Image (tube, rainbow over all chains, first blue to last red; front, side, top):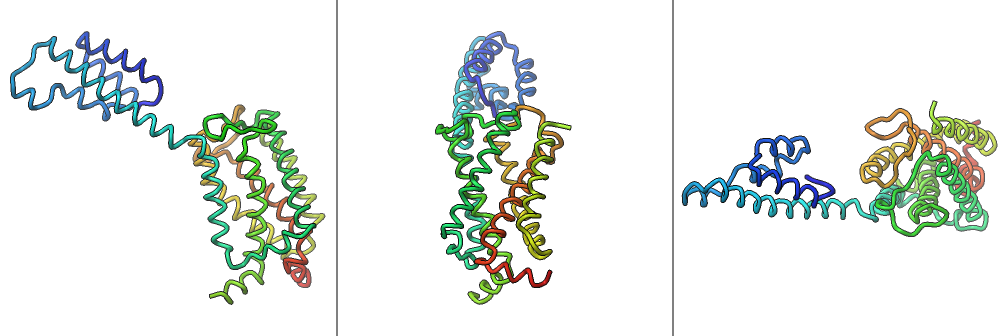
Length: 193
Length: 105
C-alpha cells in the first residue's frame, strides 16, 4: 500500500511507462513494498485485449499508463481509508476502550459513593493536578509529544483534550480496580452471582 | 541513561514517599501493587496501538523498547498507578473497607 505523495508517484510511474522501463519500474515498486498492489499493471494488457491481437509497443505503453492511473486512484483511496482509521479519534477510542474494559470487569464491585463525597472529589482533583504537572514536565523536556494527526484539535496548555480525559480515566480505573480487588469486592461479586 | 529514565527515577522517589505516607500494612501494599501491575499490563497493548497510530511519539530517545513500546512508558504507568492508588487508599480506605486490612499487619 502506498502512503503519501500519490501525485509524485503517479508522475514517476507515467514517466517510466512512457519510456517502456517496466522492469526497472517493477524493481522500484518492489522497494516500496507495493509490488503486490501494482502487479496487474506489470502483467500487461487484459486477457480479452490480448485475444484481439498483440498491441504495438506504443499502444501497450498508453494502456499501461492508463492502468497505472486506475491503480493509483485505487491506491489513493486505500491511503485515504488508512488515514481515516488513524484519524483524530484514535486516542479517544483507545481511552474509551480501556475504560469500558475495566468498568465491565468491576461492574458489580464498585460503590461510587465514597468517590462522590467532598473528600473523594478533592482527592481526584489533586491526582488530576499531579498528572497535569507531570505531563507538562514531560512535554517541556521533550520526553513525549502529541502530533496533531492522532488527536483532536482542541488543545489547552499544549495538551490535547484526550490527555485531560486520561487523567480522569486513570484515577477512575485505579478506584475501580481497588474496589474489584479488595476482599469485600470479591464477596460482592460472588453475592451477585 | 536517557532523560526519560531520570524522569522515572524521580517519579519512583515520589511513589515511594506516597506509599510510605499512605499505606500502613503489607496487605495494602500488596493491593496497591496488584492494581498497579494490572494497569501496567493493560497499558502495554494500549501504548503499542497508540504508538502505531502516531497518537504520541518521542522526540528524544525513549530508551529500551519492548515490541516498539518503551520500557520507560511501562515504568511510568506503574509508578503513576502506585501514586494514585496509594493516595486513594490513604484517603478513602476506611470508606472502601480497606481499613480492615490493617488488622493483619
